[in-house]
Image 1 (cartoon, rainbow, N blue to C red):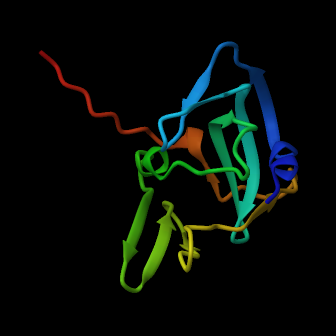
Image 2 (image 1 turned 45 degrees about the vertical axis):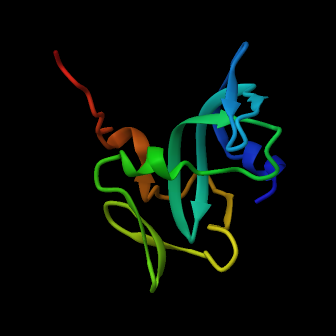
Length: 128
């Protein structure tokens, strides 16, 4: 999915001021906003909340770390393949060169298979 196509999947958008994302090389790139997106991944309709708009990136990225913290979700990888699992379905990940999941904008009138706001986020907290 191109970045312009990704932006067309936004349901809501709120500009961010003085916000940035730290990349793997430790550089900082601006985050212009955050919102909710509705997209299709492997023919599954998915709504994700608190998605960041980082135009510096060439392609949209999905944080496996954030996704796996949602109840019922995980990222699985072994010698047989890589998969994103959701409470009711599994999406194969093309890891032949990079971990890629083809995505495209969704029709807002179709039934949603997964909505991240409906699942509890598991947080690790230490109490003293």
